[in-house]
Length: 423
Image (cartoon, rainbow, N blue to C red; front, side, top):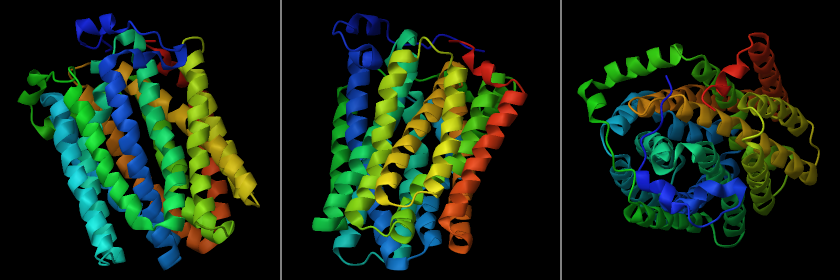
């Protein structure tokens, strides 16, 4: 079921500028533009998310209310995922991204304007977060599935890893910058910076030459028919099933941890806005450092082994975070967690892109993201509510146990080697 992604034949000719092995996909001009614009926009987005989490945590002192903001941004993936995948397979992805990024910029300016007008009640913030989540549901499928159109197949794993890494570069820089602005200038500046950052990614998309191909044959089927095609396709692929199983555990038990950092900062470690920024930023630092290592070993070690490491270290870091007693320990463990996060997600994403054909890649990507849009809100709301009852430390310990159970299951079923197919 694998195939060679259809890319511009001139891409190989663009590799004239030598780049270090760990970031070799950046030798391709269009991917370099795409990646750079994405980094800057993601930094702005993470500044906004950190600011939202902080102001809600301080104002409400409720883990559940903090997680409801994130729930509103993610749950649209569950409802709109099939439509996002259908659009990504039918229309040129670059044009779709230009439309969605423009709409997301308008939403970000609206959030800034509401905040500046002192009209940002909790439920207004939830409503604007929901609007942003709807736009993200249409944006993210095209963002993820355009990567195979920008690079030759030999650079695909490195490009997918770098695409994952740019989000984690932003996780390092965004919260740190947000912490500084929250302590000095206020949340409004975080919202404004995010709105302005969309201009950079729009300029990058305009300058790109590839990513304008549409798979018109897939558009002949309806949205739900296309979604059912993706379901059948995944069920016939052991590698995709393994990747999605690992990703489901990550969405349920791992990803919500980053959302609960404001609660960890305020209620457990008793630190201020600057230290909160360091906690979230250390997550990104760990992710970036491990990405450099991955870029150098990704052709020497089987993806199945790397994925197993990611699951194991996710379990270890969750348990260590549960027993952290001070800010320094928390920062170190969050860096370990960030490293485990990017190892797991980059291996899952690479498997999704490599083991899907061009004609159905958008819909398979949307199915993968829909599963995230199902389990992540459940994990976020469930962990937030449970943390209000039994405490965040016990919740983190449970997260670690979930990862251990998944690793045991995948190992016992001998499912992990299936993701090595197509390497």
